[in-house]
Image (cartoon, rainbow over all chains, first blue to last red; front, side, top):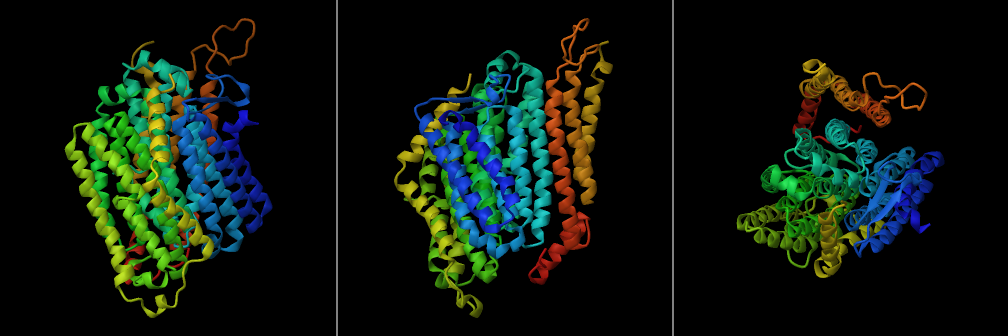
Length: 492
Length: 128
């Protein structure tokens, strides 16, 4: 049984999805979704525990030995991603019952949970697999499920957001598959470990550089690297609340993992950063994301859109860490990936509570919300502090490591940019504080109650996670540095 | 035969890729965009399959008198990619149907105008 953990991680949610379609009962489907995510989390914890000592788990699907068969290959890096995704999936699944009941018609509930499980299976598959084409297939499984989930939003703009994401997501995935095709033509293999060992012989070929470019652009579309982020704000803003939370915490992070895997384990950092000007490009785009997206976030009238733009900015910090190309930079990037996922997941869960009670997350409608929903509002403030990077929150720890890595790199101006752009986050978080606490609630808002208990508990757990990870750093910093070490060691 | 002609499949592939991508970007009609997207995806099928074929090669079944075999793996990969492409197109068209029901149009600029005027009016947008 334990020998098959790697495949069970992906297959359990994948099987759960069609089961839910057969059940056609909302409650049963929800229980199945919770069970599938709980099982995924248990497996992810077991895998994570086994990879902590630097061990690499290799699983040959159908006993076809790699590189001929598809191999699932799990080391400290993707074990951490699996852990993050399944953890968020379980929290959001437990949370989603009330939120989905309020936002979707009853007859669509079981379909929602089926899509949710499918999306989860896709994301876990991307992280678990060691086969380049398999990544593409899981990328599309999770993306197609995501398009459906976004289109389920109540607002008709959700449809347009879903359509635009479908177009851009498909272009991104196709770019990725073009890159994989070029690599396959150059190396004759699709197994990532095998590809990594063959690439040094052919890396002078221009098609290999073209492959790097195609994969970078394709994956960057999926991880919403500025300026390829245009699909993200509307998708997050108009999707059902539970979906916004799940996507914000996982989808872009898994895509970032794919980029890291290709940069460090397949192409190798020397090729990516020294032979090709990837570093300069990534630093420029990261800085643009950190500043431009934060400024745009300040002027948003919709709370969800504001935090969506903030996500684009925060992805900038992560790619900045990647661009430094050093072990410290990589550790900071993975650390921020994890901490930001928890923070942004918590924020979108809390906003889901506001959306449920107020019926809108427009700034004009949530004035004085702090008086009627004190716990939710306080939670958003803590999450906001974590986005800014105030000490004692998770966001501080990862930004601290990012600044240290930048200084280590000898780039004091990058460290300065991190601090300055964080000040922009102060502005947009302050806008929320001002609206929620210092404005008088109108008669409609004054009658509202605190968010329902199950939703409050789940989002409270995530916010508690923000604080906990800000105080107890050995877990995340240790995990991130092991993941960075595993990525740098590569699969050769 | 060496030269431009031997790279004919690549020329066709690149032409289709650019054509598809151009249609996606340049057209405002949501259906036409999906058509462009399909052409774009199809060009990749060619990128994979064409190099797998050897002149004079047969299907990779061991038999008397056949020495040269074509690589079957790209075909299998592209079979998967075709399934993905069909699913994407089907979902895209389904969303366009819903958009048409919600907005009464499938022209991108008209939809954006409808959203903008709804935002200006400050009214809550109609439920989809």
